[in-house]
Amino acid sequence: MGADRLGVEGGDLAGATVAASRPENTAAGQKALREKLTAKAVTLVPLLRAKAAEIEGEGRIPEEVLAAIDAAQLFRLRTPARFGGFEADIRAYMDVVTELGRGCGSTSWVAFISIATVWIAALFPDEAQREVFAGNPDVRFMGALGMTARARAADGGFILDGKWAYASHCLHAHWAVLSAPLPQGDAVVPSILLVPMPDLAIEDSWHVVGMRGTGSHTVIAKEIFVPAHRALPTETLAQGRSPRTSRDEFVYRESFVPTAIIAVAAPVLGLAQAALDLTLDRVNKSPKSIAYSFYNDLRKAPSMQRELAEAATLIETAILHVRRWCDDIADAARAGEELPFTKRAQMRMDLGYAMARCREAVGLLLNVQGASAFAESNPIQRVWRDLEMASRHGLLAGEIPQEIYGRALVGNFEPLSPLV
Image (tube, rainbow, N blue to C red):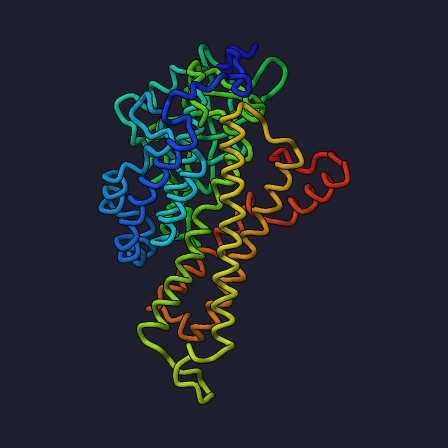
């Protein structure tokens, strides 16, 4: 079985020529777009905060919130302009989804999943893109990329059977991005597939202490047919190649692995900012004393001032690290360049570092609020639980990236992970 069955017709994104005349492709155009979309996200924060407890309790995003995101057109942030989307770059994505995280961690997470996987869908052949986007630029996606399924060849495609856990956003998605090993001759090829949600069943399996509203249940495929044009080898995408024919859309030339990984950080950055917002609001509106001391207003205590200052600086440090890498990814795509291995390794390291700084910052903010921070009526306890869980996602953990970057610094490029 040749590459044609997997939908690969050739074409190298890194070799494409960017049409600078398109506003979507200029740095100034993307900056204006980013500011416009971020402003829309800002207006949603009060609603998300008001609904966060309900979202956690119900284990899903209510229709009112989904409708508000739709009305702000944020689900189309990474949809190609050809289909009515904004075709925004990874930096615009980061700022928008981070802002949603200031309102609700679960909502930010499902927005991350949907918007990030829309970008993946836009790398597929034109026929698949038309099926997904035509008539619905606000199409919503879920993603589950564990290799836990089986597939066999069929006329014109594959028969898929299996299940995928941690399928965030499966309750509200129209389409799914899934992974599976697909047969190619005598070998099997790890691949990514696009599957309509009506083809899948959902098994209730998401019972956790954080990010409860993401509805990250298990999805199940029972002998479903996936046409060849909706399947792509993971290696093809990792190498920056795509069968798409539109070559003047620089956003879809962003390096696949760094872009897919850094997208996970956005909700965590938003949650850390939410913790700071909530703490400052609490101590400024209702100043409290420090137990077992003569301070009747904790704001007057140098120790509290230092913890607030350090927490704010740690969060800003994390944000600056992530934004810098988003800008580097977008700039390289605009220039038609790939990030070298050492830079990609450094990005993995910096992401893990940034997530650790967010956890450290929230710990300091809990100190400032004291034991009352853990009252069920205090929203910071939900932010803390959400952040502690989200920041430990496998793509954000810092231990292996430390080894990868350390090896790269001394010229040892022996692989430790396929995701660099």
